[in-house]
Image (cartoon, rainbow, N blue to C red; front, side, top):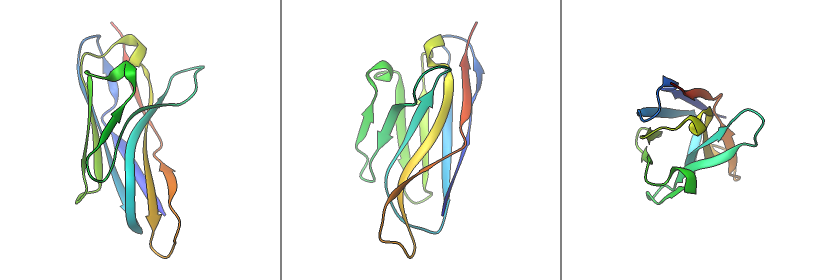
Length: 121
């Protein structure tokens, strides 16, 4: 299996910055995409940003120009630098990866437990 451990959430004021980190561990053979999703109260979970193993990044329109995703393949980590935070960014943020474990031929999605980000004055 694959374990994803997130860190870095918290309470910030509008306009401030926050960095989320996620580390993957377990019987990992290969990981394709890694990314961050978020879910606000009463809303569906949505993609925030994702990054491939070669570094190609994709962002939700609502965070383009404010958030930056990065990845360290050697350490199997993915970070999300969030700048100019807005109250509407308030949500639980989940780390995600698409991975194949040792002994399997299939890739599947794995999820972290989530970390709360609250943007409020």
